[in-house]
Length: 64
Image (cartoon, rainbow, N blue to C red; front, side):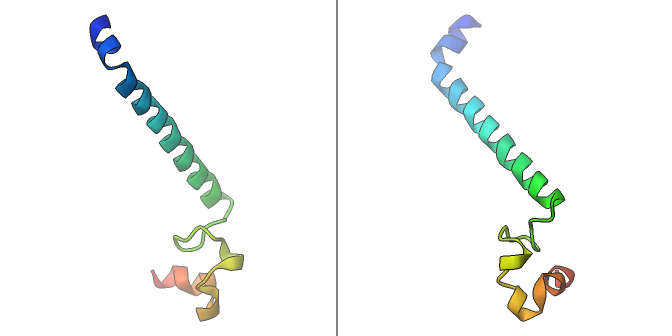
């Protein structure tokens, strides 16, 4: 078992780093969603939403 870890330490470290980064991204997305910083799938927030000119964020999200 120790030989497996020593042979694959680089791959294991990269996997751990990627898993941590993905967890942080997902956590950030969930926090932004709870704070209302998302607008129908775009991450710009309703104030700067490109869909605002076509009826606003509310109409965009209700049309989905």
